Length: 172
Figure 1 (cartoon, rainbow, N blue to C red):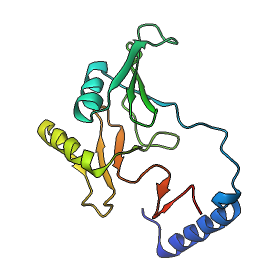
Figure 2 (spheres, one colour; figure 1 turned 120 degrees about the vertical axis):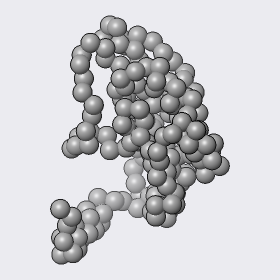
Figure 3 (cartoon, helix red, strand yellow; figure 1 turned 45 degrees about the vertical axis):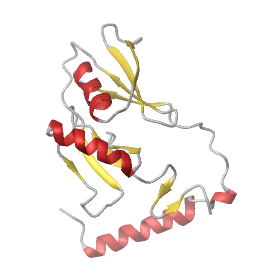
Figure 4 (tube, rainbow, N blue to C red; figure 1 turned 30 degrees about the vertical axis):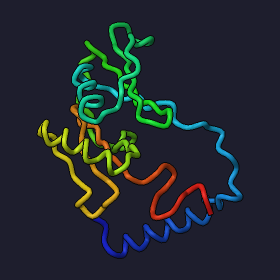
């Protein structure tokens, strides 16, 4: 059941408190100790179908495919999603894994920055393959949403990296 108007006001007040307590202005922020996300590791049910989707439909080059070093018989594959960032997948044959569900602690979606010019190419491939997508005509003009063959939510986002809500997050 969606929150009531009173609950929405309370939630926004709490977000405001958290922002003012935890967000430090960009000029005063400590430098992040990280260098960026090396890769996100997801699970697929079919290696070839995953390659056909991410490389064939979305255009992200497959750059590695090896046996998983932690589980013999499993594959570990990587796609280049730009800016030296990888999207990784494992398959785990024989484990009888069930499809994922949206839940606390799970991945809701992966947002990948891509120019709107690239969207036309992707939309054409998705249309040709009969893959449904939403956007940018759903009230969020900078986003296009769809699901991969295993139901993982993907967002193509036209915003540049570190940009959100109308402003650059790494600037004042």
